[in-house]
Image (cartoon, rainbow, N blue to C red; front, top):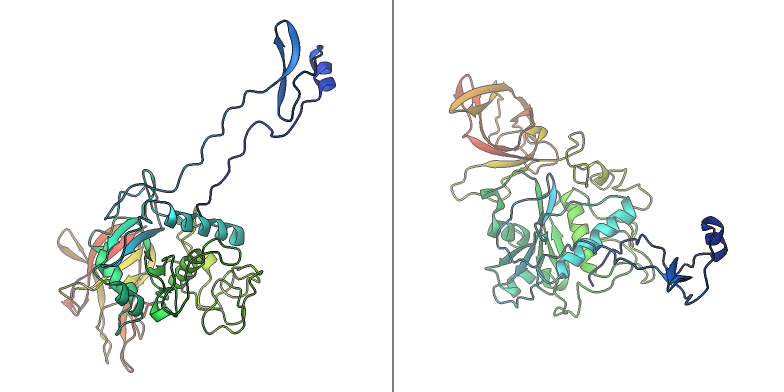
Length: 415
């Protein structure tokens, strides 16, 4: 279902002007001819003053969020700062239903923001092009059967595999993005899941096939107070990307998981941390989403949280990089940890010359606690707080007594 926002009309609907009140104001009276439900004015018709219907101007159409364009790469951004990047994925042997162009994915994105606004008073920016949402199309190299069964796969989930297929970090742009893959299959993980998302991270996969999987389950259709269960799924997985874990004590909460006891009655509404005690105004479940630098109108607030991701898609030659929001970030080293920690300095390449930025300190988690990189027991890695306000790619390295102790690595700074 495509949700349509109805614009308020300037002229009242189903109202009748009061004749006596009009006559008192104008000094004239009108014949009550042709009075029906509607809006009327006193007008002169063939020398007589009578009530006649107001000529109404049709309300301006609400701008559509459905783009009829098919694009296979990220288009020029019209949104600045953090934004959701939707991608429509058709398996190698799948049927292309044009869900990127016919409003199906757009309706889920619209409903998701309506739901967020109703629950939190906030919305999420979504990537747009000149005609609507910038929904990228991907004909995957992976088959339907593989996608439905490959999460998580041998150490690398389907999320990472699809992210590698589009590899947005080869031409990353200046704006920070979270990649949501809307995959045209009927369920994931052999019928036990409808979505999966990195926790924390910057990518997620959502099943949007309209049919039933082999177990008789479907991931779409009406669900509680949402028109499409896939709407629930993409927001759920997005919150995983923000660092939120499953809710364990409320089966009607957005972040319910397979391990959550109880069931949510069909007449009940899905809510987002209704007590504000788990992950909204609280970080009990891993993160407080209200403190994330992701909400419309707040994406340039550097006081809000936004974290780096390291090597989100591994490079073919093994070189390392980080995808970091501008502001102050904890910067570490890749693979380099020391049993006996030396005096180390972070340097930046400026016009081909290495410039020192400051001394590092030792830490068992060089990139900070929210990034899954730790040194082996008994060893420490270098760490520094680095502030940068300008998006773009820069080259860094760690040195000790003037000699490099790490290979150069790139940081992609984004808004």
